[in-house]
Image 1 (cartoon, rainbow, N blue to C red):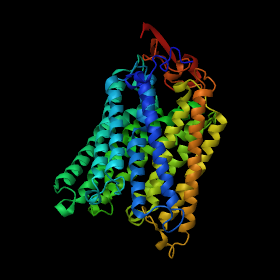
Image 2 (cartoon, rainbow, N blue to C red; image 1 turned 90 degrees about the vertical axis):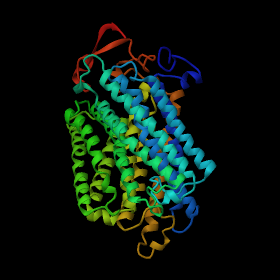
Image 3 (cartoon, rainbow, N blue to C red; image 1 turned 45 degrees about the horizontal axis):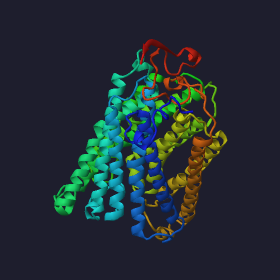
Image 4 (cartoon, helix red, strand yellow; image 1 turned 120 degrees about the vertical axis):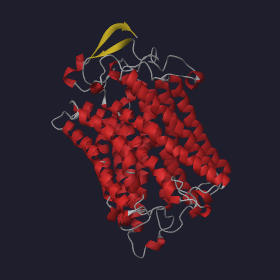
Length: 545
């Protein structure tokens, strides 16, 4: 099956660890991120198990704080941020634009090793030095007063940031310089537009978190007063630095998922994507506006009233390009021939969950509402509807979509649909109940909520429902893992284009050919979603690649 493909081009562990083929590097990212996702998921289940009932059920308060801190660090920095760019960006983007590889193949491999080095630092710090209970944001003065394991975690974030910068730089140069003949900007697949906008954010925003982690490291190691008020520092300064990166980082996580959904909507609606230009440019607009709204995380941190008003207004503004995408996705399905295969189920799931996440984001952008909801479970639910309901659901949908091209095999469609239903039910049961908890006033990060029972007797029932939902969600995710592994060994061989898609990667027979991707340089003559012209979307020139 793999003869002549990138999977059979060379064999042995060394050929994988020293590869410069973007497709194999995407697989390396996939294996590593899947392992971290498993770890982060186990930690989440442990957190929810502790909260099934009031009082101390499984863990003490210190262990609980350590669990949700590590869960946040792993899921944000080792799964969601690198997830889609590292896996699908690496695998799909060069093929979609007709390139042989990314612009800097060795730098691409180096980015994976740097990412792994950051992960190893985080794990070693956790296992050998001590536990961190500051939360994934490392807020001072908590982080300044925590164990020296904080130094290992901040070092890990600093190192992993270089992998993000290298990946973003690679994608920017690749899109600018390596497009196939005829692949103009208005013929780029929308996934490429989304990854391109994401890459700009990666390059411009990631150095800020790197510098912040270095300053925190120096303050704790050398007792220099930067953020810790006990040393003459300003903890609000840390929040400014952290969120100046971390809100653009939200779009590093969500923009690639939006690109995936655009491709899925076109393919499984069998129609030209509605408002192509608006969707493409809205990705760039979101990337730009993402740098201007960090202060909405700090409405109760003591910033001036004028600043809060401005940040609130900008928060409403960023809803416009996001709304453009949602309305055009719905318009793409209108009068289309919607095909409810597993990838499309995840696209519809994304549309529902992310819309809830986005609308609740507008709610907490309202000053009067945010003062009431700040640091409650409402914010936890909003964050997960955007990050998991958006970024991770998009990644899962994209993996199902490109699975036949990555592996050359098909997964069990019935199992895929059942797992999608479990994920949808489990996710909403887990996190929608947290909207109710938060609006009723339950604070986030509480190990024991028994003191709330007098004023909020429904807290026990809602927390139990949320925990049960997490178990259903976990069952759906485990089911995906099982049938994915089964398909690798027992799955039916995939045809060249099982979905009838029109982008360049589907012009190959079976898995993508060896490291050069194309035997002949593609000549692009149509847009990426011209389904009525599917048989004549791409020609090829006479020159061999």
